[in-house]
Image 1 (tube, helix red, strand yellow):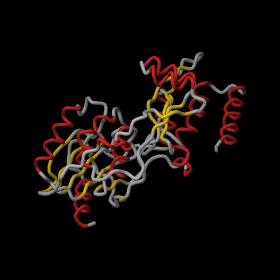
Image 2 (cartoon, one colour; image 1 turned 60 degrees about the vertical axis):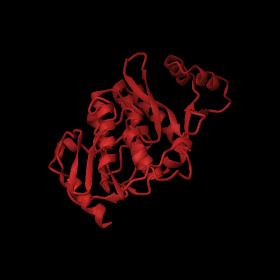
Image 3 (cartoon, rainbow, N blue to C red; image 1 turned 30 degrees about the horizontal axis):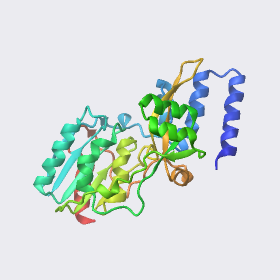
Image 4 (cartoon, rainbow, N blue to C red; image 1 turned 30 degrees about the vertical axis):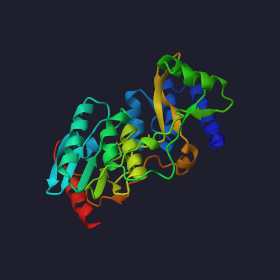
Length: 307
């Protein structure tokens, strides 16, 4: 689909190298072609990449406000509950904290829920499991299917991870991709009786990867849910299982995904990575986003009751 453009891009990078361009610039230029248009899981592990290249794509919130989102669970008003989860890595907050908040929310029967995942750059999808059963109210028309790319390097990654069965399937496959998982998990989906009327998932341009998993789940499984924000999410929602590779001479480390969504090629056609909010918040950025109930949360809480 993009073969001609890619070959042109690769030729330009090579030409610049032959003219004496430094390897760090060449590597950042090469990777940014993917990062800016298709998939923000593809990165260069260099300070320069984040300082010079990332800002071409993503909003630098720390330059516009006091931006350090922290875990928070509290009432916004008498019938709206806020849960802020700024990371899926399991340290801040921990998996146990997220589970305890989800269990507590089930008991209070609040009709409106705001899940605030601004600044959540990802980690582990499993952190959302306690909230999946709260959100789910139907099965999607099409289940998620993740494909593994059967390259020699990727197969080597599987072998190191101990995924021997999948690695052996990849070795003998005549296709470029094979399903990452054969089984369908939707059969086990539980739909809980609930007084929950509406859910808001509050995102920003830093919501990425496992953070975006919650956004996708809400859009696919929760008729009561809508995505709120101003910018698209980061754009790491169509790939996963990220692994590093090291350039042999310079030692520069890059990261790339070994798996993609079944509809990856279809979804990237617009070249605007990320998931667009259903509701665009019309007010300015808050002055502070830490462990506080900020102006965006207050606006969303009101909108939930009027929409």
